[in-house]
Image 1: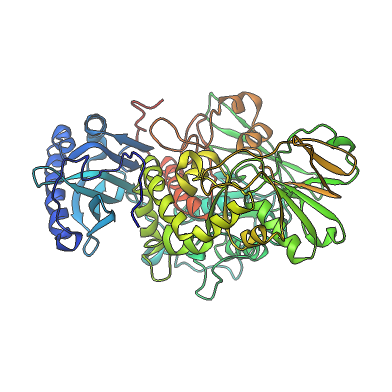
Image 2: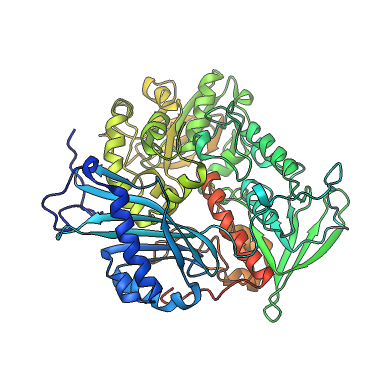
Amino acid sequence: MAFQYPPTELPTLQSLGVTSAPAATDIDASAVSEKWLASLSKALDARDAAGAASLFVPGAYWRDLLAFTWDIRTFRGPDKIKTFLADTLAQAKPTKIALTPGTAAAQAPFPDVLWVIALFSLETSAGPTTGVLRLVPTQDGSWKAHGVLTSLEGLAGNPERIGPFRENSEQPPHHPQPTLESAQPTVVIVGGGHSGLNVAARLKALGVNSLILEKNSRVGDNWRGRYESLVLHDPVWYDHLPYLPFPPTWPVHTRAPKLGDWLESYATSLDLDVLTSTPVVRATHDEKTGSWTVVARRSSDGKERTFNVKHVVLAVGLGEGWSKIPEYKGLDTFGGKALHSYSHKSADEYKGKKVLVVGACTAAHDIAAECVRKGVDVTMYQRSPTYVITVKTVKEAFMKGLYEEGGPPTEIADLLGASFPYPMQGELGARSVLHFADLDKDTLEGLAKVGFRTNKGFMDKGIFWSLIEAGGGYYIDTGACKHVIDGSIKLKSGPPAKPLQGGSSVKLTHFTRDAAVFDDGSEVKADVVIFATGLGTVKDAVHQICDPKTAEKVKKIWALDSEGEINGVYRDGDVPGLYIMMGNLAICRLYSKYVAMQIAAKETGAYGTPYRVGKE
């Protein structure tokens, strides 16, 4: 099927001035990559930033994850790449650039896009580094780079304690868990969910002692405590944790309680130091010394302990615990039960009652579908359009080639994904969303016929862009859409719509004692109203945990900065020694590595000077 693509910043053959290009199958990708790497190596050996920059096409990217910059940066265009290299080569001292055998391949992701992709290795002063290159044909027949990723994979002189470097000294029969009184951490990690555990595991592998302070009574309770129908919509291949992947018998989609149990066993298996039922009362930063004073309180007896550390990792999720319920006139006098989806546990409580779910993204669909399975009368109110993609399309198209059965090793898949800077992922999404919609045509048309509004995601760039820029607004269909289409889930939205075209819905204006009333004069009777209307932000947690002066210094968190990197996370940013760790399982798996290496490098004196030139 031919698609009408929107304008793009992808390196199309037309934008490159290439009128005739070879078929991907006719390209010797290894030879093309070797030749380009030889030119790059020659330029970098000579500290010739201009020469290196000349190997890139206009609009090209170089994304660096600590290797050259001790930061997470993306430089776009030959001029910015030239400046970045001129400023960092003396510190980075890159050497030993070599193609990784067997990794070069020619790909044509779209009819008008052709590139050669390959992995390569190099050494920088920071440590062993892995690179990913993406070369495109040019008008004169040569190949130049449209994208380069350099990722620090380890610290010079301080390898991870894994494989041949694992600990082999005599160990006690059981790992002695610390107590509030005995713990002596170098790093305090606030939160024992998957993001906190990822960082703790990475730090332990680098020889850095950390302590997780978790408010719940057990590791994994943040998942066990959610609604019972919650299942991860991402497939198992995408969700592995570092060092301990899920076993091959693991289901494709993990139930929330099962994930909670896995996280608890992960902490035990990796001997991570965790204090449960021990929330942080306050974390205060001393500007003069650069140190942190962290006060924790044991829930059982109220005893407090003060920790003095240089590093604090906030791993408290994307806003969990700070529910957002819109203000509606009459809600305070509504005679039924009103709650946020974060507080919902089971539809068993609502048998014989009428349920109204306000919202139309992931939690709303999950809860509404659960109501159908339990025989509960349920209506979903859609306030605004939703991006919908089926779980089948996610597995067979969106993640194809990276996270699938028989796919590349997880670490390689992560780097291949990271080699596309977020803006480029958005450009890919703007095209891919059309292909995915074609695969999901029956579902999308069925939804449109009953008035459910769908769109193409945030800025028409699909699911990943919606996650990164908007933090939501989508639903990966694991079965609820068929209930919307057949009317088992009643819908309050608007008249029949067109797939992907968005459109407006009726507005909920107020509540009476027993109903929600809309601006068209209609009403929906309800005994229970569940608001699946989103959560707060991690800044709520920052203000709750950190002292006011420090909290005010923390600027924007999440969404993209001017370079196309996520604001405020994964690196030492607005406040020295404060690292914010958040995201889904895959994002945290990758970026916990860089958080841990920054901290370990500081502890050993190996940390270089972060390159901040041109950074807003």
